[in-house]
Image (cartoon, rainbow, N blue to C red):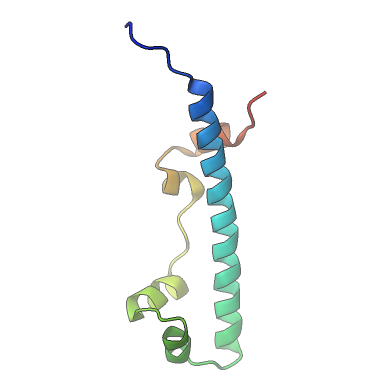
Length: 90
């Protein structure tokens, strides 16, 4: 197959950056979920939280009920691929 040369190193670097961003987003989401749980345990009604954060009822339900998808699922790749992408370029 002949065609223009493609620099796959740049693509791999972009994928590595995406993985890092996703990992940061996952940690941030866990922090938010923890703070929501603390607020509820402190007696703040879920409806007050929803109104203060300007969330729909469905959004609040999903935050409180659902676990966030795993990194590989969010990227649309296998666990093995996500692990490989996360390894830095030598």
